[in-house]
Amino acid sequence: MEDQNQCTTRDEQLKNLNLPKVLIHGPPGFSSVLQPPFSQKFHILNHSSLPLHKFAATHAHHCSSVAAVLCDGGYPVTADVLRLLPSLRLLVTASAGTDHVDLEECRRLGVRVAGAGNMFSEDVADLAVGLLIDVMMKISAANRCLRERILLTGKKVGIVGLGKIGLEVAHRLEAFGCMISYNSRSKKTFVSYPFYSSVVELATNNNVLVLCCALNDQTRHMINREVMLALGKGGIIVNVARGALIYEKELLRCLMEREIGGAGLDVFENEPLVCEEFFSLDNVVLSPHAGFSTLESHDGICQLVGRNLEAFFSNKPLITPII
Ligand SMILES: O=CC(=O)O
Image (cartoon, rainbow, N blue to C red; front, side, top):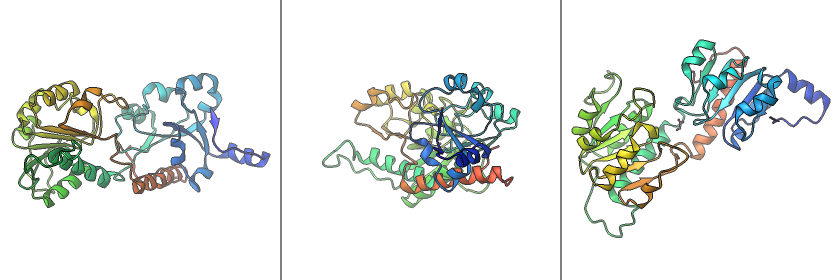
């Protein structure tokens, strides 16, 4: 386990010992998300690229006093991980999605959780629209001249998950003259877009599906063959949420057999691996889970994770609480 704040003097070491211990749980380089002045207020521990349980075996003294974890999406915080950290009181994830966190177990243990809130919503919505235009206009497929005149105007777009990102996508596509409808857990009273309680019906009545919802037991593989066939041969699927919302094998089959028109994918079922069969298809546009990787989002999340940690350890309300 690396001690991130390299203390040179005994005074610094003593000061560090009194600071709340924050364990970084993310990819190499992720610890830079916690920047001064926030990083100076915590005793930051980094378990590097080795699995947490291996470090816990040799660094039990550190693990036993970790008060907060700062994690990244895709770095699971399971019941097993939580068991390694008996003093944990706060988990801050630098992601909007929380499917990598066992929220039930956090609730049971009384561990508070904060996330990225709406930090990435606009960027992710921009990417969704960008992918859609790219798939439709075949820009990445490098068609020198457009073989057909495909315009967004008049297209019917079904949004799956009308949270902040879904709404941002809807607003952008309305400006292109698209007709919006949606599916989500419940009908929203604050919009007049038609609501479909079934995704198959949403697909039947639209040319495009844009996936913006959370991944959970109810939504895993919700976009299956039935939904794809209902969307039909000209239909396009854009996914900026989580790869496992789509039954990826079926998506590949439908794309290969031209059962749907195309897909714009920022996320994949087995990230960071991307199924190589996608690479040879000209009706798909791929991007590497990049919806939130603008400079503005990066600066924003650096501030936000620090502010959440600071708020918690000053007994103030979390800025972007999840639980
Ligand atoms: O995918 C990115 C996020 O959940 O923030």
